[in-house]
Image (cartoon, rainbow, N blue to C red; front, side, top):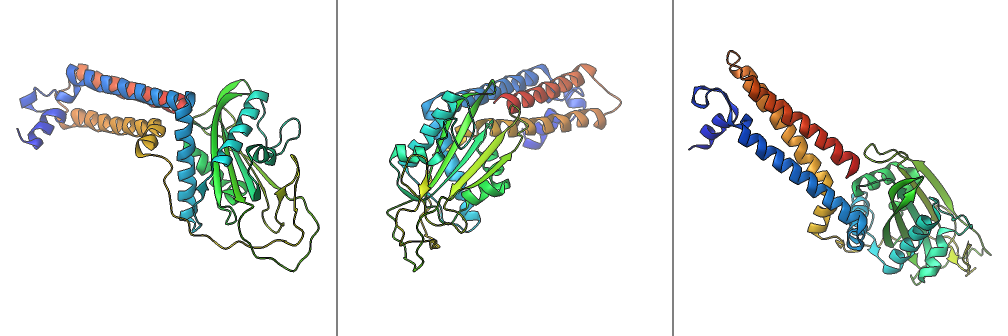
Length: 333
């Protein structure tokens, strides 16, 4: 049977199929529902794996790093290199926020983001932190950061060389959520040019806070960004647990030349597929809805004198079920 003939039997009412397109018969409806339930289950499984397992958290962090580097390349900035110490610092910060129930750069005890860099053993010239909460998709997090001037400045900062990311599940404002912690840094071992200006010491920090609502998550999907050593401040070096100051007074502010680093993918293709599982399932659902709507209109309008209301009701039933599945997929997975 030719493809065109098969498609005609499947979607278009005519005398050969008794004016009942096969797409709206019981077997086809059952297949569509089975596939839809399977896809929703796959989306739920992907979400559970990403949010509930150590391996899933690692995949989420790797995907965010790759998305960050893609954005930097898009804006003609060098990609960042992943540093395990920055990953550790981000994880320590995330665990502290979860255990104490806060979402902020400074802890209730007043510990700054640079405390966690010290705890991880990362000695830095420049450092920055971006935070996000109530997001379930890495692309949504990246887009929210890019729309916020403070976080965008961190994400695209030419002075940063390395990056670390952690995702930690916890409870915030009585809602289960995912804390996303993104740490940037330039190690103190980097070779820099000296200047003649002599500055004794300084404390430098630029705070930018933005609240962004993500329609597919719980209320108050938020991001926070903080950096130190940005704009026209001088090099901060962590000398205590809570204060960033300049240790070497012979060095003041200097621009770091752009370093061309090779683009390394930190997430695997199957990891990216798994992490964006709910997004891909949503796209498939939308495609199926469009197909059903087109087929339903074709069945009704092509042969308007011969209407089979049972099969029309099958089409409407599939349409409504898929709309419900789209809502569930967006709202929960």
